Length: 206
Image (cartoon, rainbow, N blue to C red; front, side):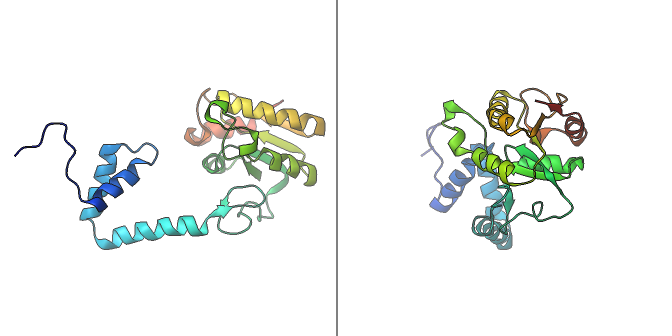
């Protein structure tokens, strides 16, 4: 007997579970989740084993740097332990992907601080959920002369930068913001290297 037009397809449990797992990832819809699952189903066992091992290592070995909160496998990330980096500058970004985008420009040789998000009251994200207090403590205890606020050029990023600025002003540290070569409302991780490099070089005082 034919199935009704909108009836769910009969899938064995391991296949259905993997489709559901893929479907929980950002930008992965049901069709893409299904294609990925059936690709792995047809692929050699070694492909699936490598994926499983990589995921296990990701969760077991990767941690946050104790200093800047970048991702790392050691106590401190490679940038924090690099003696050639300018120890007097901190570039504040929302996510590790933003840090990678800035590193690709080759235009910045200072340190970083990763907030792991931005202020978003409607989503329940406030100061306490971010690494803002850790940043302020670094500025107090490290020989920092400039903080570059490289949060995204959108409403949430601007609100986050303003909140940080209010804490930094009384401390007398130079505080700058990326230049407006970046498109308003965009994310740093999608900016091309030339635009992002120019935004760094043309940063403005706050």
